[in-house]
Image (cartoon, rainbow, N blue to C red; front, side, top):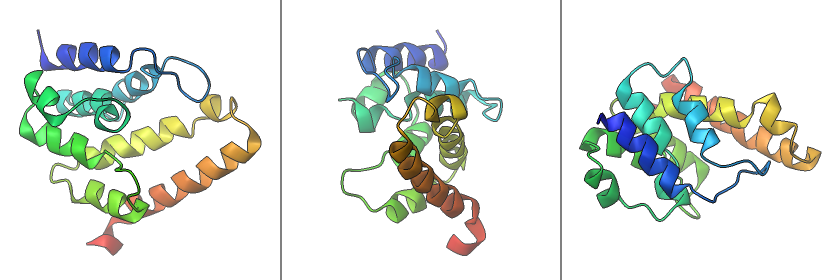
Length: 149
């Protein structure tokens, strides 16, 4: 079995029972990201399907090693993990600092999915406004790379 197959199965198991803000199975979100046309390599797809595991489940770095994920991919998943009480700028900078650039690419696709009309329309207007502001700041930070180097 390919690593991507292991990642899909593992992420589906770990996100089992979780729902998104619209009440849909949470796994749909990482699956949509993984299937995005901007993610073209198997590494990017593995990172995408696993991008919320460390943050939103009891998954550990050891678990990722155990399913066969190499260190460079784990580094990207760790970069995509927003730690509790961590300032956004620290989190975003860690994404920019990830050597392969895959964390940044996955995060941009993640933001695109999180701000899609179909997802936003399921949320109350005040939640939409808060999330749009949050994601716009993230996009600005992550796309103005020259300013951060």
